[in-house]
Amino acid sequence: MSKKDKMKKGELKQHEGENEFATDWDIEKYHQDFEPDDHWKLKRLFIETHKKKFPEEKLVCLAQVFTNMEFMGCKYPAETMHRVAELSRDVAKNFRAERANRLKRTFITASNAAEARVKGRKNKSSSNKQLGPPANGFKEIDLFEGLRFGKFVIFLHGGRNCLRESAQRSNVHYDEVEILEANGRKKAEIYVDNVLVASACKDTFKASKESAFQEALKILQKCSYCIKQNPSRKTIKIEKSNNKLTCDIIETETTAPDSSDDNKLDASNKGYKIMKLMGWSGGGLGRQQQGREDPVSYLLKNNRTGLGNSVDNLDRKYFGQVLRNYKNSEDIRELQFEPTFTKEERASLHQIAQKYGLRSSSYGQNKQRRLIVSKKFENLKILREILIFKNARYMDYYFVQVPETKQMLFPEFSTKLSL
Image 1 (cartoon, rainbow, N blue to C red):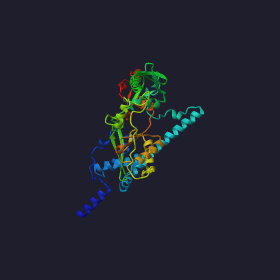
Image 2 (tube, rainbow, N blue to C red):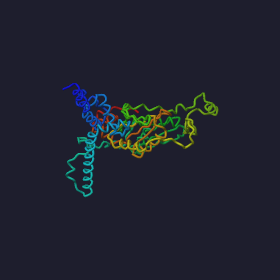
Image 3 (spheres, rainbow, N blue to C red):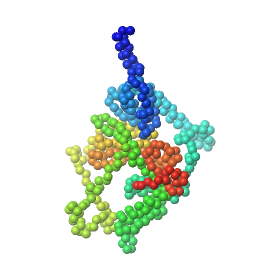
Image 4 (cartoon, one colour):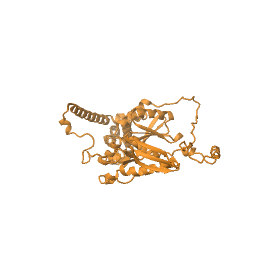
């Protein structure tokens, strides 16, 4: 065979991708701990299919682009998307068909069960099938049995508003009562589910409420479940640049401190001096010092557009698809939209998130303001996934402390959590 023929044959082999690159590297080393199983399964299949055709680093990048497009609806330059679509044609086709069949089987099983219930008979064919997590000895346990405050669960977040927000989340009545004593001292009482939990009497209502809150939290943590988000949990960061969207996995950033401290009056402020001369000694205004303590903040307008005019270049249809895919996925991580999104775009994302039943909140100031979108989970769902099913995704995302009466049952979750 001539040298020219050998060169042609080599070009043909390179074009067909036959063993042109090393294949002895380990695919599993690219399996991240935070990566959902279905994401990794599809990515690994893509890598295995094209392992001979590309260098290791390039193939891993293409696989990540493919899973981002498939699960998150991310967009990339047209050339990249066309190439990945061509490479993933058979891989995605088989995966989508398998997922469609799985959903169809689940729907048929659920429909049969509903029909049997309406007719008042049991469906024998569905009785042998298990939907959801596998059964074990704890499946039928009532986690709230015998608890003093029933289904009240403390969600350790929000500082001083922790108990009030936890009561709303648990659908339990919560109340803080102010009582002016005959001697002029101020008393505060905290009720949960119409039961007095704690009280305190101080010189001001603010001090009384703070003291009563600390005592109530101490008591309730002994009698109720506590849930706290892992401060080192993984978050999906979404950033926009030149009409391109990029995603990355990061550790949750610490919430920016409240800027209200910057607005507090100090001795150098003229208003502070005038109020001091008028007898003000600090704290809130009003006969019972119930008024606000901080000056009313202002909004600085820094552009020449008319009032009420906003600029929103957000593709609502596209981001609606992104959030819908997120809602329907098994991923429980938060989506963090970076400050590259404008104020008007964040407002649109709030509306889209609300439409799909997602929770959304913003934090940070001015150019550092970010938007967090997350799924809503009931307390019972979180507790069952962690305490009963030992779901690794939830255990990485939440910490749980069980009441004292349940510590014999769940000894590994008896460590006290702090607010």
